[in-house]
Amino acid sequence: MKAVFYEQFGGPEVLTYGDQPEPKVGPDSVLVDVKATSVNPVDWKIMGGYMEAMMYTHFPVIPGWDLAGFVNSPGVSVEEFQPGDEVIGYVRMDAVQHGTFAEQVAAPVRTLARKPKNVSWEQAGTIPLTGLTAYQCLMNVLQIADGEVVLIHGGSGGVGSYAVQIAKAAGARVIATASESGAGFLTELGAEPVAYGPGGVDRIKEAGPDGVDAVLDLAGGDEFAPSLELLKQPGRAVSIVDPAVKEMGGHYVFVRPSAPDLEALTGMIEAGSVTPVLDETFRLEDAKLAFERSMEGGNRGNLGVKVP
Image (cartoon, rainbow, N blue to C red; front, side):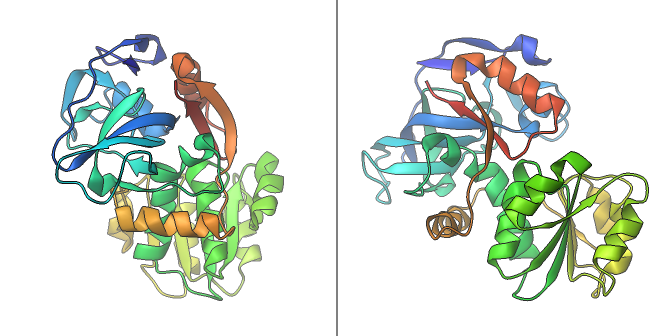
């Protein structure tokens, strides 16, 4: 099968498009014919060796944890899916090797859910990692409720575009930070934009003079720690970038595979309350360009990759 892979740590230059062995399908896995995936910052951080201390890596590595595609054949003990079913998956394994930048993936059934019927393959390929991250932070940890005020640091990126919409769907008022150029995009998503940078904390306080119910940090930066003073209930904060948030009484989240959470996202997307936002789409053979674009940052929404 065709795939993108690398045989040593490095930048986009180490990526190769070529042939790799077809996957072996375990009893509780599903062979998926991949139609789309997406590139996320974690992909090039792993490729650069920055996460070697916490994850076993076996070369050659096929990168990627997101997929959208058709079920080719289920493993012998799988009853949840049948050939031809359209699925999405956050296919994070226990070790880094067999990723989703490939024509076929053997995905554990625990990582898969039904694909929303009302979105394209490329949109669907962006749902698992970024959508799950936003959902698990807001709904599982912060447990956002109707009428609450949520502050999101970094609302215009891949996770942020889902987070703003999920919070709005839960009935929250959303204040979100981004660059000045991202203000219009945040407004379209339903958030009240606040420009980060010098004076950012004061602007956040002006937007939420009565305080906020929860804070979600997707970007880091100097505004995060001071903004915790606005919390009505101390400790109701989550960061996906800085584990030190735990020392501040909050929570650090690294997204986990969850079929039920993916199913919940599918329901929200089919209901029209959440829409996957594609900034740009690349072909699988142009993975180097997709990685370079992700490393540049500043994307509005997600970066999709079409397979094959």
